[in-house]
Image (spheres, rainbow, N blue to C red):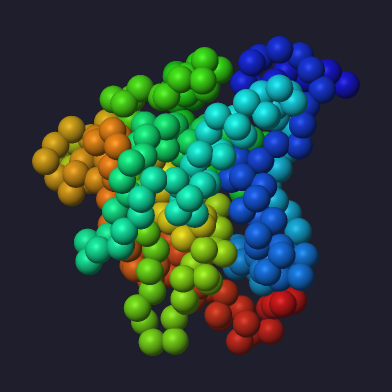
Length: 257
């Protein structure tokens, strides 16, 4: 049955498309002998194993390939240290010799695919159609999304607690998007956060123009370099609450893992 492709808007046979790239989930499943451990914030939903990669019928085959080649390959290779130069410093991970605007477009392409997805794990992404259309039209043209359209912050996960997660554990941690609201100098901002491959991505729907730390680490402010500051995974309230809830379920026997 022909359905409208969310990207080119033409009717076609649709692929089983992913927002967070399929290779991220394949790596998870490989580590877990074909399955990953799924934790839910739902009070009565048990910890369980899953093979769900959060895919839905979304894009035609041509658009699927376009996004994979134009954005996913570059962004994933950068996050895996295969693009440019990567050096760790006390203030964060320093990337150089990169195209930061293309990297930003990669993050926004995942955000856009999540926003138009019908999968339940992306339902928290609720954003104005005008913003989604801005991203869609840029992706169709294979252009980088406008530098001043929004603010994207990327941070490197770490866990310095005793007996905590090591780097390999953190890279195999995927969290469905969650919303936040901020007040910065009297201005209110909304954002959506995503976690995968050991990084914490936060997309603000509007640009933040100030000298604050937020704008200092805005992706795309420098064309060829970027610093991802470190963030303790236990300092992300949404993630910490999920871990506490999952541990409680384990003690209550509400676990199929």
